[in-house]
Length: 198
Image (cartoon, rainbow, N blue to C red; front, side):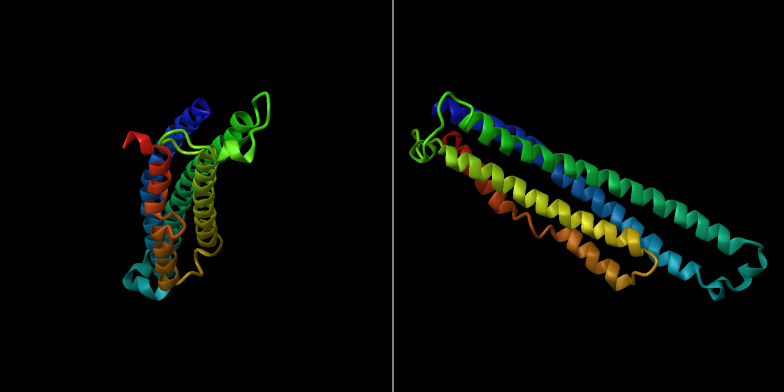
């Protein structure tokens, strides 16, 4: 039983390494979103020829500026989609280690473990149930947050030129808040698994 718990702890160490990348990716995504928001605000001003005043005498100035800004916006959107893909890789990794933990460690032995064995505690080590529940929890909250990020970026992609400044601010705040990942609960999940190391 202790050997199985040790295998789970190794999986949690790998999960912790992957999750540590989450905050860095979050910072990149928020930065890209702010840049995209600035360009979208600018585009709404640039689309009105009245805002060019004397510059209207320069042939094609409006189209050139709009084209340049649209190109910049598209580059930022590509960067945001690439960052979302990195988030997705973390979610898939968490799903895999949970599935592997449940399948290979608990059911992969010569005999299926009983509920009593899953709840058995060896010293201060966590139970196998604690380990499985912790992996599932980590996957679920990160997957929910990933899905929210995808929805926000999709909303911007689909309606970039129709979004108002207040819409963009609200979406940015939602993106910054990461409402589905309570950091104290993530830390608590790790504390339970590594209790004997404290």
